[in-house]
Length: 474
Image 1 (cartoon, rainbow, N blue to C red):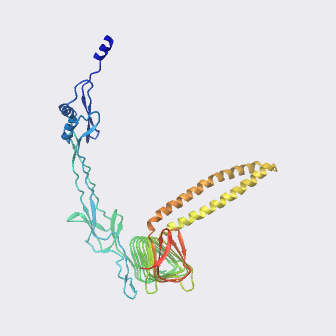
Image 2 (cartoon, rainbow, N blue to C red):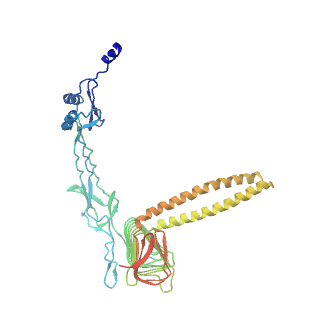
Image 3 (cartoon, rainbow, N blue to C red):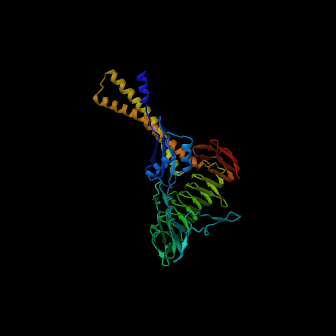
């Protein structure tokens, strides 16, 4: 009995205590009240003293602190003080006094005549006119730690004046950029704004001029003869006929008549292409292609839309591909000329899919050929009739190839799947026919195919529930 009494007298006695934990960024403070064991509980006053010892003086939730002790919310960490995070400054901006995202649209009258002269293809500017203005960054708001120390905000970045060739700061206000010459604007993705004088060829592009390679924009008042090349960094405006020539522009292309020849002509544009007609030629546009009359036996590819809505508005023969949709008055002809029309896919993607399909077929053929080769070699080996060391090496090589082919096929299938996922952004692309479409027209939307077998009028083709559906054109 005496031993038991002595053990009870030696039982543990511990008073309650307050523990304070300040986060490394000094923006939060956590408090934990440890329960007493056969002793006195910690008090609100002790907690206040402990907070002061830890230099916590800002953002204390005093009401919560009192509730902790009133309700004995012990043995758990509680957020008791919060600092004020800083609000970072906002970067400066550049204000533009010209259109950085131009859309070139041809005007059409009630009779379907298209005015190719009133397009504002080139953004002209006079000497001394404003181009841009640099807006200063907005200041941030200072924060504060739980220990009462200020937290400076990150300052907004100051933008530089995008001064390119033939531009200068305005003398009265160096934050404003003005043109130093009469010319046209070249905008280089928020980095530089330049002004270039347009280069004018008053007659034909032929042996008198040779090929043209120019950094700015170009105006040709005559024809472009067969076999000549034009390459410019800006826009091209050609008043005459282009005959089997190669035209390449960093910007838009305007052919006020059209392009014709025996198949050697190519137009490549970083912007829209607008022309009256195209026959036996190729066009590659990163924007829209707008045709006033007709597309005949040509290859036309656009990352935007292809629109053929002039008086005739024909697409006959060839291949016409537009990622965002195609509109035409007539597609095909009464002779059932084979005409391929594709939307929801770009020329680059179309080629990539065709390449993958070719490689998948090749992979399948290789698997069969390798399998047959291995069978023949193994049969020869077991027959023990003249199986040389060279054939042994060939057998090993065939087995290595056989092992690699499934992985190659898997990678091709995965690449194909990724392209199809990317193409989903064009799933609403549509083909609209405002007059007639004839048999012989092959339609592709994304990866779905549709063959036109009977004449239709005022119809549209679009993807519904993963199938191409023909309906009335609205």
